[in-house]
Length: 276
Image (cartoon, rainbow, N blue to C red; front, side, top):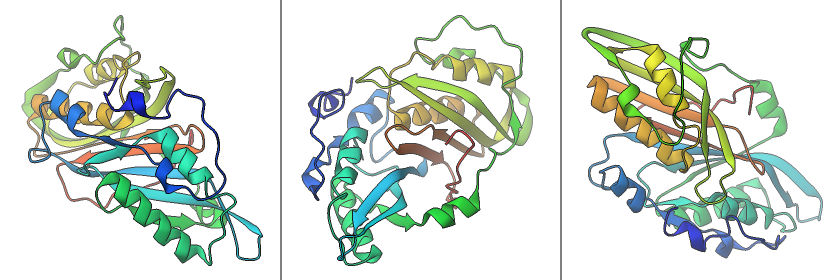
């Protein structure tokens, strides 16, 4: 368990407060997990964002009439802190009986509070149900490797030793899998996700990638650190010219978390998958 997480509301009984309470947000420093991966804030080999989507966002107009919408939050991957997910949900629920003059006022409040908790500027967009409905759902890029025939016997910890590549061939491709699963390091609840890998480098053996992804199945870690571990393991193996790893996780409590890590300055999409 992350040393700070044991002091968070995660895994504990909590009172749901329905009026604006920014103190509910619980930041967790990224430094401990970076150190576990051999990284520091100064040596991060990737750029990226964590997209959070909130499907249970509601507040009051000055008239007292409630509004519902969908919130999109983008937290920089190099921010000093992640925001513990249950505290994020409790904070968002504290808006339920709080009046705001208009949507812009709410966006400004959210950006201020979330940026203070993350330690870096957090992007905020409040979107109408009609707008998100019109976008529909998308498929991940490239080839799905889930139908490959593999034998698996280990699930407790990520197994980078399973990964194989052909250094005599350089390819540029996108592959993905929907078989990513890990567990919350505090509550042990399952975290279900889909992961995509886009790269130019030594040709990755797809079956070995699938076996590696499955090896996360009983691993305990936060979403962000799982994606960072996959990125680092692939980077060490492939020595790629460019590499992007991102995961789209199934929502829990109205929130989904979607980490993106890349060697490139890319315009990151935030499109829902069918399981989201």
